[in-house]
Figure (cartoon, helix red, strand yellow):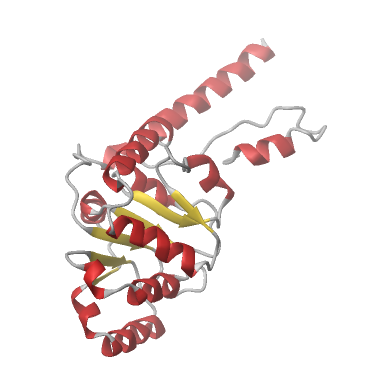
Length: 232
């Protein structure tokens, strides 16, 4: 299973007899060219189905709109993914109220070309995910691989295991729908009160070591060999 938390619970059941193993989700390294994750631009990125209830992107947009314009100087906010008509209209309404946001928001639409999507990850400094729920959140795995400093909601148990938080950690986890915490976390970046570049590099190192499908399938091979040995 994908989380260590579930392993502990499942292995308590007699039917599994401590046979459940840990196998996280990951990214495919074959699709990624060598990238210097230290060459970053002032981009805050989110990726997903924009405007859906699950992704809760309106929370992210509202927080950006609530930040003083001078703090956002030189920064861009990329909204990547298919977008609902209602959310597109919602964005237009916010931009009419605060016209300066037209120069900050970059709405790409859906990007099917992985190389194009990965180039945006590679340029971005911060990755924000405001989902109300996720099964895993593969976009987070990809963002970490490319050295983005992750700010995410606690919408998925796996996030606690793949994001090291705290003073020496490389990411920030906030409560679902907590706009105040999200604004504070983003402003810490804008005010240079967090070394988001260094933390992004740590996130990348963790992803390369632990969330690479070549490593993960290698671990799966170890599990299979253990079974074969027990069977003789």
